[in-house]
Picture 1 (cartoon, helix red, strand yellow):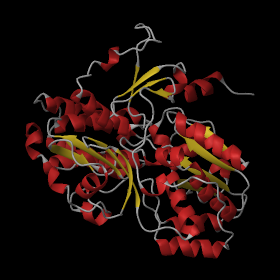
Picture 2 (tube, rainbow, N blue to C red; picture 1 turned 120 degrees about the vertical axis):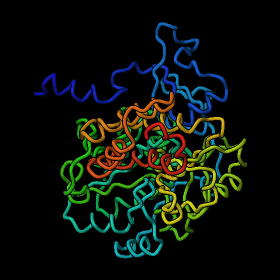
Picture 3 (cartoon, rainbow, N blue to C red; picture 1 turned 90 degrees about the horizontal axis):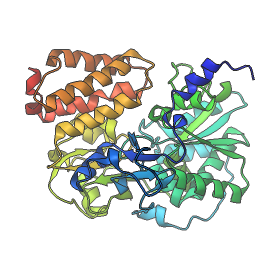
Picture 4 (cartoon, one colour; picture 1 turned 180 degrees about the vertical axis):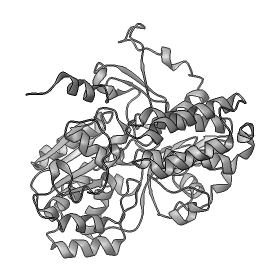
Length: 450
């Protein structure tokens, strides 16, 4: 095959799960699992074993396994210990019968998507019709890919769609394939989603589609679409410099349409004429019924938790409105609409719609430290601001937990600005947001920095 050993090692060393046995025990250390593990008194998780694993094998600590509604989470190989359950409502509870999208001219599809105001549901919020139109304007052959690599802590909505409505996702995918004039498509799926993988493959086989499920290997940054393309082409999952954008030159050099799972589920309902504005919200942490709920776009955290997730389970100390990169907010923000405008005054945004609620007993600095640990571990290391900055900020916050200042406030502000302005992708650009939120909303916790 004319592949150097060094090239193989370069790829294998990048993906954490390529270096582990398939039956390894994995324990999630994400913020929600860390909080819930404290609440249940199971902090010594690094020594947890099962009947099928000797103590000498131990466990692998991982940053997030995408089952935050079941926190604290442990996996034995592909199996979620305790099983996968769902709490949800709305369209996710409807029968998942295989249906084909209506045969519509491309201009009509674009018109319907534009009138619906649908934006990407992965976090960037780019208008869907513009992305589709950009790909259409490029000459074929084209490619179509579903981004199912949701890795943002607290985000579980795409998993719910794939496990409960795989045919609805495929209906939207078929519409995208027709629009781009392709007869083959790909779903890039995160490795920890074994249940989703099985249900997708069954649904694909039932329809007889030429759709390939490409399984990732444990890299959060591969949720960034250009890093995903690098991974699919057999390289380290590192973001590409843009332009060219994937719509111009994507998978194997072809113009490529990449959409999030939830986005395509909405596309299917829009083309059916059954859609009303709304989205899926992942809700986890100290709420009575954590799960994934369909709710209005402008719902507040209080409205979402009390109206859909059974209410708060104790006094609220902090909330994350849209995934780790969206920020950390105080209880005073509970009534703010979960929109870009509604959260902008709080220095935050709706992100991937992953609402996480933390109790007053869970220290804010610990929440920030675990958040920055996640970013430090998941940085692809390609650009210096992200590679060094996230590790430095994690160290700064850990020192603050002990009342020590690892650097001055002025220096921290310099690092935050450099990361936000010069990092290549959204990981390094957005990871300063939680730190800045704590500066703004809990200034007393940062006094040691001067």
